[in-house]
Image 1 (cartoon, one colour):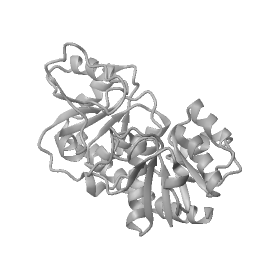
Image 2 (cartoon, one colour; image 1 turned 135 degrees about the horizontal axis):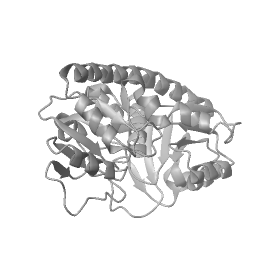
Image 3 (cartoon, helix red, strand yellow; image 1 turned 120 degrees about the vertical axis):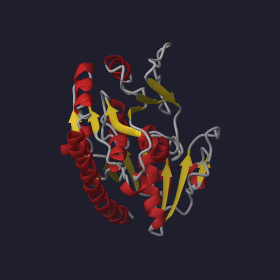
Image 4 (cartoon, one colour; image 1 turned 180 degrees about the vertical axis):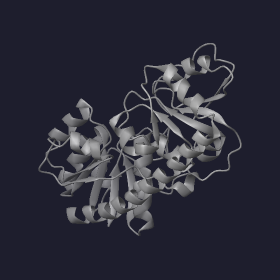
Length: 318
C-alpha cells in the first residue's frame, strides 16, 4: 500500500499531532508499506530533518507529487486541500482528528468526499459522533512505545513541557514551593509566557528533539496543567519513564492516564503544590511510579492493536 500524508507541517515538528502522524507513518513503513509526506506550500524553512526517514515533498501540486498513492492521510486545516486532490485523483482520503474545535468540525462537515475518520481518543470519537456519522471511523491512540522512554534518572526535577499550555501555573507553584527545583521546557509553538524575572528554583530550556535524554531523565514529576487536551502525549511519555503525572482532569488526560494520574484543578496552584509535596513520601511516590509504568504498558498494548486495525481500515478504503 502506498500511503501519502498531506500535512501542514513536517512530522519532525514537536507538536503532538505531528508526532502522532510520524509514529503512525513509521509503523506503516516498518510494515513494508510505502509512505511519504506532502507539505502543500513552498516554504521549506522547516524542511526535512535527518531525524525522520520519511520523505517530505514541499509542493502545492499535490496531484503531481502524489502519483502512485493508494490512499491519502491528512489532518487539521489542510484536509480541505487534500480533499480536492483526492477527488481529482479518485483516491480514498482519511482525516485524523486531534480535537473537537469548531474549525475542525466545520472542515470535516464540508469535506464531502472524505472516506474515513481517525480519532486520537475514544472520548473525541464519541464527542464527534454526529459529525459525518455515515463515514467509517477508527480510534488510534498517539503511539508511544515505552521502550523509547526507558531512561536512567540523573536528576529529580518537577517539569512542565510547553508553557503555552497554562504555563502560568508552573510559575505560581514554583513560588509556593521555593525549595523544590523545577524544569520549564519551552514548546515548539505559542506564547510561552516566560516572566521577566524567572524564579531562582526554575530552569528554563529550549524545545528538544530528545525528550527522553534531556527531559525525562531529569524529571521526577511531570505537570500537565492544560486547560484543553484531547489526549496528552507528554503524559504517556512520562508514564513510560515511570514518572508520576499530575494533570488537569480534561477528558483526554483522564482517558490516557486513567488510574495512574493525579488530577487537580488547573486554576488552583495550591492543590498542585500539595500533590507535589505528597509525592515527596517515598512510599507514595513508588506507588504512583509503578502505576504510571503499568498504565503506559497497558496503553501501548491497546495502541499496537489499534495500529493493526488501522492498517486493515485503510486497506478497506481502497
